[in-house]
Length: 280
Image (cartoon, rainbow, N blue to C red; front, top):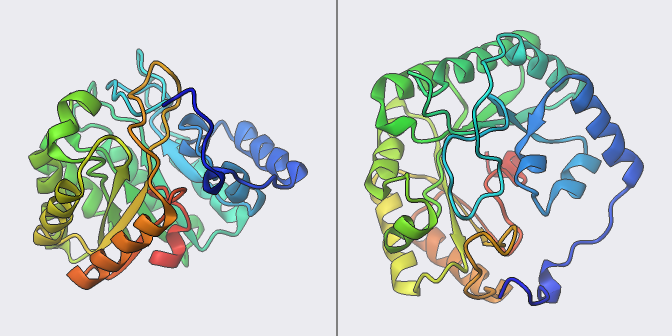
């Protein structure tokens, strides 16, 4: 279905180009990356025009090769020790009261990059003491030491995406393990922090499988949830199985809230950090 036209509900309006260019110029000047750009997020225009972004630390080269993701895979860069401070200064310049920090997966590093997450939170709190911070982390290969490093830095929201149903893991994200991702979320609940996860629809999952994932997430203590439409970045990525209607997304939101999730954002263009401040 990659070559077909998207349905009308996936077409975004044009946003102010001057505001977007100003944001891109600021990020380039600070040598900062965003997942908005690296993942070709469909909401980039809206977020950049509002002066918000999801910062991506630890470079732009991921050590994994998930078939749904357009972030570059390759030899990763050296850790930039000044990156956390530059992020904090940019957050202050933008006047952000809520910020999301994510990263590429760095399986090459002993701690998976956990210390860089902690340093970034520390710097944001020094420069912007009133700003709340959400972290969207990789699985750190299940390392409790790495998770402790991030969680001891006291994020205001801990996010790790489950992404899809167990049956599709081998095809969609072969270097990840469904149960390991659940254990990451479960461990975070011990720190009494709101725990969030996200799921893509349209990859070929069944409604029964989605319901099972929601039950698993609720069982391990996940309190917040995002559900959005999978959009294949290219013909070389995992193909779209179907377009999920806005009405079906609304049904899933209702189901999740009835299951006891405290915050749910569900819609075709919803992404992990889209309007994250409203959920927090």
